[in-house]
Length: 311
Length: 288
Image 1 (cartoon, each protein chain N blue to C red):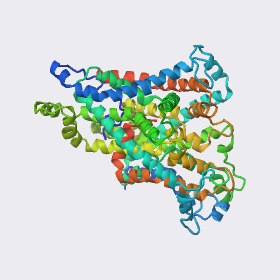
Image 2: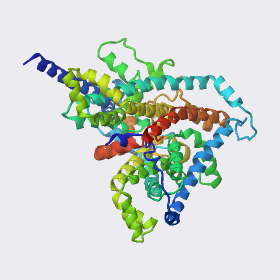
Image 3: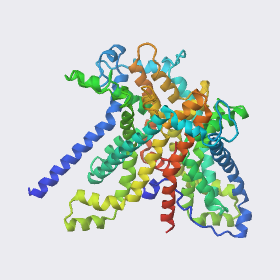
Image 4: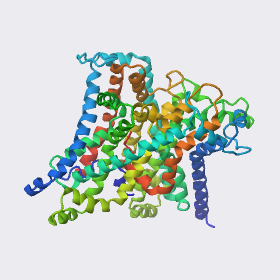
């Protein structure tokens, strides 16, 4: 696996400017026809739908779509809704902790595997298997492990600490933190795989130079190697951040947003308002905020990434 | 032994100790779930899920597979399993082939605007499902196939298209242009070149794409919940319904067995295909 292979499918080669000959253009008619279904799907299902949702978020739609423009009324109501305030705030709490935890553990694992040579395959297999498991199974598993009645708290009490308490998953002010455990468990293998590929690509001469200078290994990683891999680390942060904004299955399986709506996230808020409460105006406004959050993460990233490649 | 050698050795021991502890963090949840699924109902009620089963048995597995209840339906997760298989096969085949054709058309045919199309597809890969769910529901209702097998298959194809197309486009763009040029000089057209020149060279990327789509579609929850309808409920949706049913005593041994049965197909794919799986997951990490 090369570093570029582990990037986002970020338009490798988007910039290859084609020089078009006349003969080619005539011959490429079949190619153009082959692209028609993709273009139709893309423009209708994606861009058409996005336009519709964003527009509906600026109307007074409730049960059914209404097309009269109403400005920012839905957004004002949305941000005055306590449940949305919790869900939106949770996105940042969960996001910050998940990014720090997953990135930290992922980079640590990559460095450890970069040092140790024996049994690397076994370690890698164990670290990466959670990635193949669905968020539903992950969420249920962690719900069981963290449940005070059958899980970790029960175990420690059986071992003799009879008044041990670890019931975060049932505490309204703590439940959101339990999602971080599951998030880190599921995603840090991916970060490890991406970072390890990066570490393996580092020029061996740099290591030799550092050794001759007498720089300790940990210092070489912190001050030389990791700064060299900054673009890769940024990619990892973007990946995790997008996953956080899109989170849905994990919270459904693990806490179902509860207790109350204390561990709600925007993804769940939108689905509940759209399909259970049938309030498409509020759902569309919340979905648009999700879209805006993703664009705020992705656009600068793609801009700099493409600019870097074109240089 | 010099001081330096001793330090190095202590470092090695510390390194491996740390690795083993971290691997425990990764493996314990799975081991706990396996252990619980092998317990009897009585044992589950009295002990924490961390204890080992005293008399391991597969009763819970059998119950989970063939008679666990979702509300009033007591057919076990096998119902969801076969639903997922029926959804999976057409969705994977069509979305992989659609991605291959799109990626091929975008790479070697010098189509004007190909770069723009790719950039637009790239943004599609980042759009959260929630933004376009409702319009798609409306569209499929209008066509009259909402809540059916064709509907959920179509939805998986739509959501797979951006990542699949970009995956294949990046692969084909790396192949030498002379291949296509030579075939053109021999008089082969778009489809002949695709079938006889490109496809035979794409075995690796086809495996990567198939694995990526198979695990992704098998593990999907949201799309199955919204688009599949009651009769085609995929396994993940059924599992969550079983596990969150709050009536009566919660049978953790049956629930854990159902969770393992749901996780088994992608786990098997992962253990068998290792390297391909990792390649796909890193390339498709933006999906969802």
